[in-house]
Image (cartoon, rainbow, N blue to C red; front, side, top):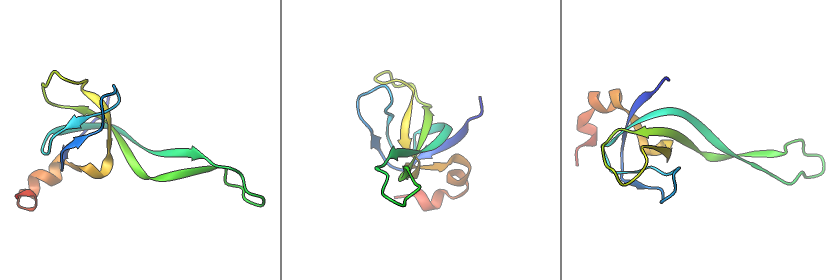
Length: 96
């Protein structure tokens, strides 16, 4: 299984279902895949497009901490993450 190490930029509390990651800033999230949400739309006369892609991209990630209050895999918006290598190489950007 291919995973890319990322760091959460902000606290993210997605909810209480098995598909939600609830993490704090600087937690490591290993991203397994990314996807855009797609919705079926009404077909307008003369329009070939039946599906619309929503603008936010989501990551299916594995949360790398040992907190016991939630599952360690779930969804998080990709914009909440940066790659671990970029984070490590540019720590000055992320200091408060």
